[in-house]
Image 1 (cartoon, rainbow, N blue to C red):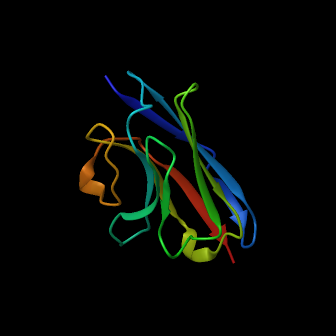
Image 2: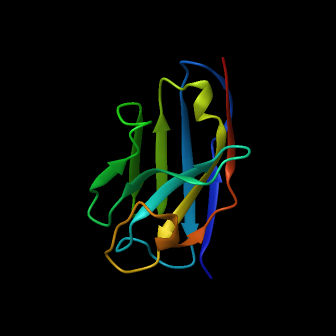
Image 3: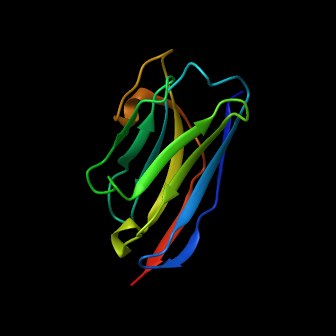
Length: 124
């Protein structure tokens, strides 16, 4: 059974940094895209970043240049380095694994396994 566990969230002042981690277990993920999504109160879940099986990355325009997604396949771990945080980055952040082998997407529906989420709060 696939399990994803996020960590690294917390409270940070605007302009600060956080690094999120997502530890994956249950199978190997080297041939699957992995992504980060977020959901703020009263809003729909939105795409943040994705990294393909061969480390091609895509970012939402709102985080481009500030966030960096990376993966360590040997450790089955996904990361999200978040710099220059803004109040509007406040949300629950979720990691996810794509449904299909060697495919990549920015759509939440194309991801089949999800973590429980970690809260990121940015104070202004």
